[in-house]
Image 1 (cartoon, rainbow, N blue to C red):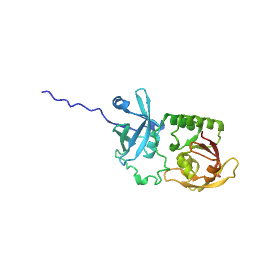
Image 2 (spheres, rainbow, N blue to C red):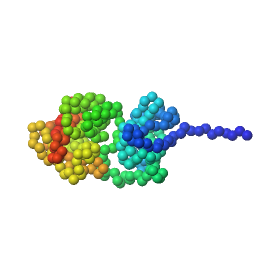
Image 3 (cartoon, rainbow, N blue to C red):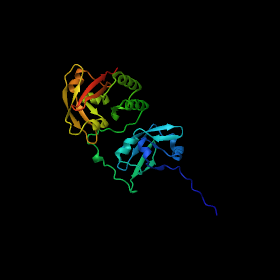
Image 4 (cartoon, one colour):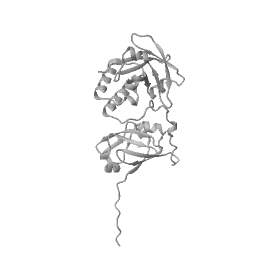
Length: 271
């Protein structure tokens, strides 16, 4: 007796057991069979969606037939507190979009953070954004130089990236620093967002104010506002007006006195 063979659809699911090196190297290799079936559909950035609907953007890096989740993967790991031995199931939908399920060491699904646990002021929270090649080049350079930059400032043009690199090289910074590429929303509200990594490493949440040193002006305190699960923001109305700062200007803040929370401001005007 002959049996009718039902055609098997291409597998749209895969799972990965998280090994220590995928955390240390901050990337996760996508299985070969999945790449064979769907690799050509994957763009430069993947969208990962958890059961609560939270979206994470992770850059995809390709090298021949080998594909990884790369920039943004480590942030995904940290957000869900994923450790070596956890298991993550990926269900491919389309357009580089995956639904994910996460299982811990007990083989049970984790409790995903609810949207109510996110910062109420989502405008300031560092979210994963789709990555561009210019961003990767600038981010890699800044990491080598020990300079932090918030994700909201990482999407840059080729011209901005080149100017930022030359600016940093000209300064010869000797202390911890972070970069801000001003956006129109920053100008409108006269505010600066301090990246999470920089804020957590060099400030405690009891810090109430900082001082900014600008050429030709006196040091004055600036009150700061901490963001839940994030860094902090501060306003600098007087400085923005006196320096006539505009969208696209590049600002670098160097922490020259840690005990006094004193930051020196360098500005490269946009064209």
